[in-house]
Length: 318
Image 1: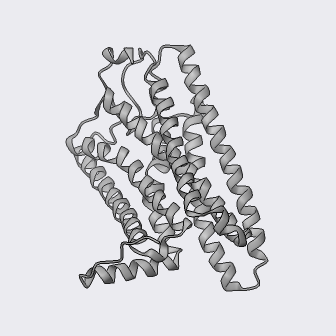
Image 2: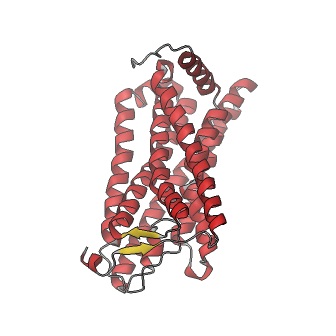
Image 3: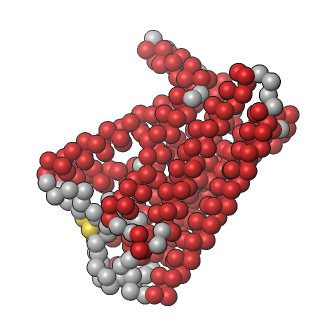
């Protein structure tokens, strides 16, 4: 990173100039962040403590909550601190670290969402083979592959982006360090095009995963409609529709943020789109999965009852 000596810090987007509005943004972000911490933390604790939830579906949901906590903790605390202290600075190293960890979490999360669609497909369309195709070892390997893919993708993008020479200032029109905003500061057209190609390739892979998810759900819905029991159809739809909604919001906003043409780019639009894919999913995932999942809600109520009676919950995994 030879250009680190020329730029020592970046300036992030200020949400407002007035002090009152800055404090309002701080409390708004604080509420969202605490809600995400509480919701994802409850899901992680409930799945960990209830041995009845030690199944592939809940194992993947636990990993999803961990990734949600990581991704929202990478962006919002810095934005809250800047709003609270009326500051927009972020150091060069902090910016690189923010991009690296954010890419680790969002890449791994999207891989995990794809794996979760496979889990639902096998559970509904091939229930007799579920134990064989999704044994404990296979689940661990798939989750490890998702995390490993996130790490490698983040390493590639971070090293590629911060090897660029910057000569277009240091102002980023975003509330966190985002690669498209940093590329605008580059003065090397060849290196710029190289990173754009990497981003396009990554988005195309993401789009391919999305197509796989959609095809999986087409098969799932066809199988569900053949279920004679109305209660069985309702249970199947309640497990699948929230997952499909989260994936659709995540991939559509992320692809738009990274591949939209410069002609329609504006600070306000970039801010809204980035907020939708970086902050909204981690905050609403616990609500979507817990409100639509009767088994998880029952276990959560049981765990809260255990904690309120000062008894230790079971901690031994099957």
